[in-house]
Length: 325
Image (cartoon, rainbow, N blue to C red):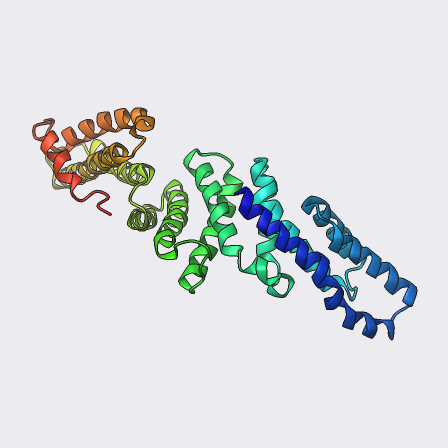
């Protein structure tokens, strides 16, 4: 991380310090024929302050000050590029390292929303990598039910990232065929969690299935899938309990629907346990495994007329089809 950051800063400073003079030479000559030389000099000096500043937070502040004071300056396009260089470093390194997630998301969102012509190529090329970082943070907040505004922003980033990948965008420096499915899995899961909490169960199930397809090794995704069927079970059970005549066709249908959902809950609880146990650090899932075992047994009973006969064989039978990659 430190090495890659150092490399990024070197590239960032090289372009800021060495690329600016040649890039601004032609506009400077042209502007000198049309503007007050004294005003032009003030703008040029202010632009150079931005270009030469090495601290990303100070560069960010200086660039914002310049664009507020001289929005129509000849040098504004170059300052906008420096502003986005600073935004990138602040988002993926400075603020994230300091766990200032609100600041991280804000400056990243501003960068992603900015016009393409305002982004240096080396930053535009890294936007997908930044989105992956943002989605990873938003996914953590979504799983822990924290900071919903950032989760909502993360969903937008995830949708943008999926569109970029579907459009052929890659992240250089990684084994793309290996990492691409994992990135997509994280993006789909984040959207799936949001759909689940909005009670859009079909959409949530579709997204979580894609997440499992891309990365079958995360037990949280299976547990979330079980949560979808738990919600459906609750709906069916409530309907059944509200029917006075339990022998009616309507009651029978509701009961069968509840049993079907209970069976899916037991299945995904079992798959959660299997994936946890396959992990090299299975001990960290000790509490999750215990909770899942209790739920699996309870819902297995619902779908098997109150019995647990054959539950061990049931679990064993699911192993072959759970995370076989």
